[in-house]
Length: 400
Image (cartoon, rainbow, N blue to C red; front, side, top):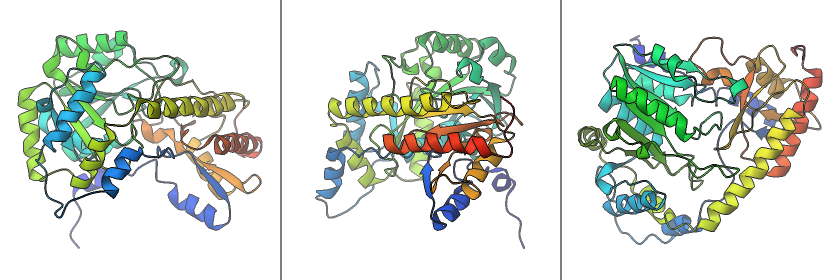
């Protein structure tokens, strides 16, 4: 039988979904499973987006321009300008999710064998995108003790070699919820300029910043305009994960012209999803105000609850809707599996994502788990109770 490719063998499985079979078995056994493993919000999609699809008045679902509908790119440009980011329509290519934007970007700016530096822990699918483009991920470890702040730039610079092509960040971050400060981004800008690298910033959680924190976009870094590539998506902003619409954004004309050729090869992003995304631009500010207020409450319930459990430590995130917690266990992956297979409290249990899958460094994050606080407040309170009770009886618990 013919063998599959080396690239297929290298493609990692998702750490976010790897425990799904155990969750399904737990549900069949009658357990209530609180899904804290995946960033699928239960927040309602804006009504303007839903109505645009419900009231669709077309007789043909046609291709769009390979860069996306011009009207949507114009609207998206206006949205960015309103938020203080000077992006023109020609600086935007609409993609099939933020995932495709990163893949197009990597394939446009890097050659197979090149290296990209990423502070870890990072969104696990960056590994898959790197494999797709034939790149090597070089991690620089951020620590839970520092709330996952940007590692010292001296440590990042040590990782730069002749093969280094880009630095990749997520801001606010998935899985940590950390929001990089303007000062940290200026340090990265100086490093990028010094070594003539690309700086990728995944800014899909921009709307989700808490406690008065204000995000600073890489598009506003001066002096490296041609080095910066921003990734965006409607998935989280409008709770439209199933509408696979993202954006690749850069002022580098050569990069955008080349990336468009990849866009042409896949013809166009989804038409109906673009219609919904364009309509979502008319979402009232009150929607975001309410959503952010809700996530602050959810974050506080989850993070404060975790930190009230003996032996558990969880830094309070300033953005997104994730946190990473350290547990007093021998191995977080075993603990997460045990929660689904062997534990229940009053018929309930919890599903988390083991954090080791968000690190590229072997052995890192072994006693950490990522938690997405995307459930309603009552479910989150129950999940905290489950974790508290579970740690009382888990056979692999370590000393506090």
